[in-house]
Length: 239
Image (cartoon, rainbow, N blue to C red; front, side):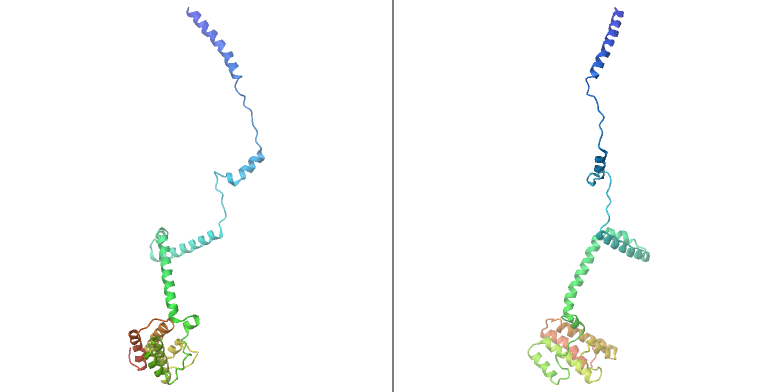
């Protein structure tokens, strides 16, 4: 009985092999496919399909400018580090936005001060360096009368201008300066031999320019306070 079963298994095994061979012939056959190498080359060189490699680009003029600025800042920080021994570079780049804010604030303050003081000295660059006294003759005998009239009319800016003209005339009369219409306030100041007198005259000149060319608003109390220095100077009294 056992021999019969073994023989049967051997017989069955022999029958299976032809069945597998028949099944294998029913599977789809794989065919070798060839690709166009020229087309592949075009695709490989197309930048749109460069997924795995970084495409380098030449830096623009803007990039080169900021590289130059960065190198300049680095050189300054390096020098400061050598002088102070502090790690300024790391702090600077860590707080770059704070530095930019501070610089912008300083520039804004300077710009605002420039607008204010641009009026102090003149309407334009010429007037900024030249005290224009040509409109009135400092040798005129009626300057004191003009001053009294300006004070009576409450024209305080004009009155302070006349105070300054009287200072100039006093210096000319005493021979301490030489009058030239083209001379500036600095020219007159440079002619004064006494250092303290030069300093006092410089303050008077600044006050005059601030009030007259800067069109500073002036009331009676302010005029009386400012005019005291002009009167004292003409009277040769110490400041």
